[in-house]
Image (cartoon, rainbow over all chains, first blue to last red; front, side, top):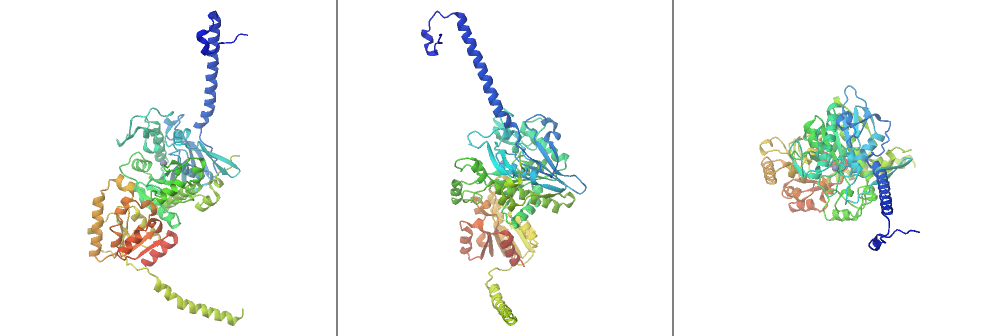
Length: 397
Length: 189
Ligand SMILES: [Zn+2]
């Protein structure tokens, strides 16, 4: 029996091995390597391909139409920026329209789950509500290295378990590469660090021939213009040590509407602040969509410790339950901008706040501008908190 | 229960009410403030807009001017000053802290000259308590005739200390739906 020498024995291999046998051996090694590479690529592809598919949204009876952002900006067709748009309600005389953005930052699940609840459990009897649950689609296809974020988290829905991706704040570098050293916001000349090139919420109002982020932002702005969107609500989450939290940030034209909605929420027992959109901070939805389109642009924030810097171990429980002893400690030291005790800020509460905020803002639009009425029915805050978000998500079967 | 006992009970209840009711209103520590009311703020906090909107929803009409100047303060009996500043707001909006502090000092001085009553308020809780906001609270709260504070923003007892300093009446509340609504409806009849 011929035993092939181990590589370590190569130096003292017998010199009488024929040239044909050596070449045959090399060919075998080459073929095995090629097969191994194909297998590894195939397995990796199987593992990574689903990452670029959006999470399941099971539309409820309120959804009248489903489309893609590329309907409004064809330049997005067949790109990782082309995301789903759901339309609730019908156009009609004396009615208005509202756009809700979730997942502008895909590591802020309070925003995209609230948008999902609107699609699955909301209904519109006057006017239209456009919902884009995963605005930065590409950002859902990866997450941030070094952040220990879970890839997915699960929510028990009626009739089954629903799984949602925990993405990255930014667009996947596979879809937008390389980053420049400095990101220059095209319309204002504002300079930010290069990685902000992939941040959708620094790319508004966007450009048709710009980066992927700018093209997605342009698509959203085109939807607003074409559909005459009166009110645009961008749903976000922030770390509890960040000053702008549990807040409605409003473009100056939207301040009276935001204050009216805030009063509704406060008189209903929910504490929320109001913050005018800083005029010198560019690329953000509430600044640029308000400046470059007629829409009233607002943004809302809830607290998410999974993106916070004071957190301990990061698990799916961190995302779902929003509890962490280090944050309780931070609150005792007066370092946080939200109250924080052992109950934390569970996802159910955050989604409940966002859904309630959307309802209050839509109601204020109808009060302040009756000719652009939108009547939206959504689950109430108490119900969402007591039953859990899963109750308002449809069965995966 | 016999008819007579029932009568006696009713009579007793009425007597109790007659005795107790005036003592409740006497114990009521809340002062009253006259209209018209001007709402403004220190630190250019957006909380002044919140205050005006809340009062409007509770049926109390006010005039809102977030950056009112002394020349525009004539004709009001009461000034509500919402104190605080949003860290992000002041910095990003490029508001100069010293200039804003000057304006705040001027409106307090002018209000005194005009004989106006001043209600100082903090309604935004933890979100609007920070080192910068405190610069717009500490010098002004003790100058007021009445301090109204959402309890969440008084966890460190700052407002209690400031009120005690100049013996300014202070009322804190835990929620807007009931407590806040009842207080403002009482003090702005
Ligand atoms: Zn965000």
